[in-house]
Every structure is written in C-alpha cells, then in structure tokens.
Image 1 (cartoon, one colour):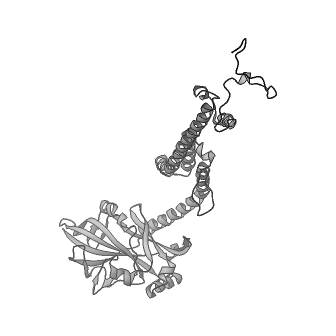
Image 2 (cartoon, one colour):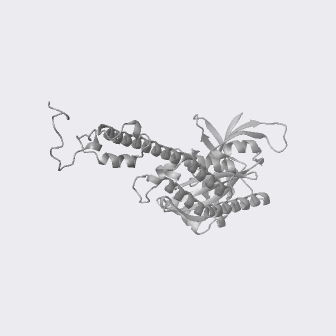
Length: 378
C-alpha cells in the first residue's frame, strides 16, 4: 500500500459560468466536473465505490489559483503559505455525484479576487472567456495489482485537498510523468502525478446533465419562493411577530391562544404544499418538524406563562372578594376573571361589607339603632 498525490485536470465550459449576487456581493460561479466512475488514468483505477466514499471531501475546500507550489514542492491548499500566495477568494461547494460523475461549483468572491494580481488575472480571463481548466488535488491510497492489463494500481481510499483554477495551462509536466513532491499530513514526501480527464461524449453528456440539473434546481427555488413567503407569514402569524427589523420577537394574544392542534394543522398544511413541489414526504416532514420545533416550543411557553399569570391574578381577586365578605372562596370557583374584577372593584380597601345587608338602616332614620333591647327596660 502506498500514497500518491494526483492532480486531475479538466476543461471548463465557459458558457456555463454565471454571475450572481449573494448577500449583496457579486460572485462568479464556475461549474466543473471531475472523477467519472471506474476511470483509469496513469494506470491507476478509480473504483466507483471509492469515489462514492470520498467525493464529498471536496465540499468547502479552497479553489486556489493553480496548485500551490512552494519551495519546489506541492503544499496543501489550506497551509498558510498557500493561502497567502494562491488564495483568490474562491472555494468549492455544491458537490454532487450524478450518473457516475462528480460535479461541483467554484464560488468566486469578486471583491476578494480583485485584491490580488492573480485574482485580477483570473477575473480578466473569465471576462474574456479565455480557456479555463480546473484541477482536483487528491490524496490516494493505492494497492498494487499484477493481474490486470489496463492498470497497475487500484485506489482504495481518496481524500480531496482542493480543486484549483487553471488558466490555459498544461501543468508542470505531461500527465504520464511524476511531478515534484508533496508532503503529507505525517510530514512524509509523496510523489505527485498530473492526469488529464478527457472530454469524451459520455463526459460531455454528463456535464450537460449537470447544467440541466442546476437550471432545474434554480427554477424550483424560484417556484418555491412564494411558498417560502407563505411559510414565513404563517410563522409570523403564529408568533404575532412585529416585522420591524432589529426589534425582538414578541407574541400577541392570538399567538398565546394557538393550540397544539392548530400548530399540527399548520405543519400538515406546509407538508402538503411542499410535497407538491417534488420533495419526498420524509424529507419534507423532517424539514418542517425541525423548522416548527422552536415555534411550537415558544408557543407552549407563552401558553404556560399566560396560564400562570391568569391563575395568579385570579387568586389575588378571590382573596380580595373573600376578605371583603362578599363571597366564600368555594362560591368563586365558577366565576370568570372578568366577573371577579367587577366584584372586587366594589370593595373599599380596609372596609368590610355589612353582615346583614338586607336590614341596613336608612340614612335619614337617625334613631333606628339603639343600645336598648326591644320590649322592656334594660
């Protein structure tokens, strides 16, 4: 078993390069393709299962300007020297494997690219639609085989270091030659090879399918935007949120009165709408459950707090009414808070109601009360 650093070079279809905005910043998207299943290059076989296990390591890797080469040897694109000398504001994302081939997008931050000469050269080449290539820097673990006519080694593991942007360059040597050295994570020197991925009819068809996939994906995103707006409106309605930017979320009485059944109804409604937009039921349910969980928790907390506040207010009103001798506590059990508030308002703080209200004297009858018992002398 041995290790090898391989740079796999492919050509970019300039017509597929797109200019977009992301977070208010100008970006350039350069779609690229690499690693068809079971390809043999430089007498090395890249099995489909090894590619399937390792291709996602390309995601969020740097996309340097050329393969970083320092002090006559290749270095990792994530090393400080590579970042300082080869980074041009570009990285790799949206890595996917379609019909036996790996596709990815290079995202170039135009403002960052413009800070360096290499970045400006790259932008100028893209603008002029000059030939552009990409090259995937891979670390392979190899097993030697002796019973195959088409290859001498088979890759048993694969990890991506980067996917570089090349401007009309053929690399330091021909694909069949070893090129320089690379130092691996253990500090050991590793041979480096360049390899050229040919654009045969199958590769061109795969690239066309990837472009079609990307366009369909963007079309679906545009179709879903009204649905996203509806979901946002539903969540705002649920929480009673204010839309003034920068203010904290607040909940109104409507939000507090939402029941679990209503929350479930909203979940089911979103699920039904999203299912109509080609997502699987399981994927939709997972997305909605994850999105709605904090909302449901917030509403539950609001309901709990509101109930506790109501109970505290009711207890205080009952205490006022009982102390004023208007009613016994047991008699207040069926009364609403509004009724208790009206009854408590009739009580004067510190004064008790008369015990025999039905026999209260008239204000004009000053002699109605006497210290003497009726029917005789004291």
